[in-house]
Amino acid sequence: MKIIWMDLETTGLDETTCKVLEVYAKVADFLDPFNARPLYEAVLPLAPTPTTDLPQNVFEMHTKNGLLADCASWSTKRRELVDIELSKKIDGVEDQGVFPVLGGSSIHFDWNFIMVHFPKVSERMSHRPGDVQRYDVSVLKRVCESLGMESMKKGNAHRAKEDIENSIAQGKACVEWLLSRNPAK
Image (cartoon, rainbow, N blue to C red; front, side):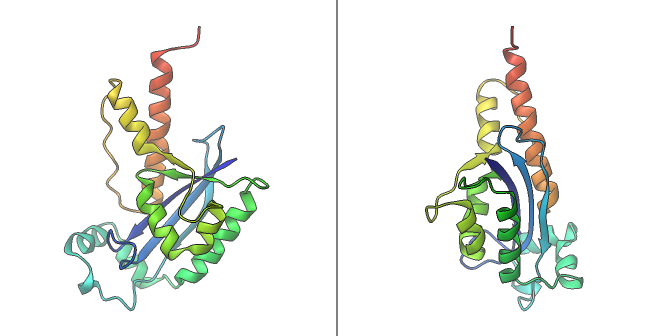
């Protein structure tokens, strides 16, 4: 079984009215979840949506991190092409007959956007519409915090690659912390 670590950057929080601006994915074996290798990345054009239509906080965030400039200056991939390319990449790593697990932080958000904007990817991730197996680092962090681990701050990059790298690092830190509490005898 594989874990597809994935993060999306968007123009807002509503998957039905907002656009996906960036996708980054890595793949790992389920039994070695933090040893992930790059799988796919894409920046999508914002056009024809003018930046003046973006919520102020989204405009400021994605201007500061350079995503809007990347969307305007060199991005030409259409959403439909990203859906096809990414679903083929997932096909290439998928274990025969076993759907991969979606990994990340607060992945319900990403999954909602995937279902609406990337239907082929959604089909490759689950045999039941709207359902996907999840490896959610935000849940793992909450469990560890409830057991006394110091709270970890979420990364602030708001770029897909950096955010997924942060999720993987935090997931690994949680597991290491849990193991250190009860070392094998």
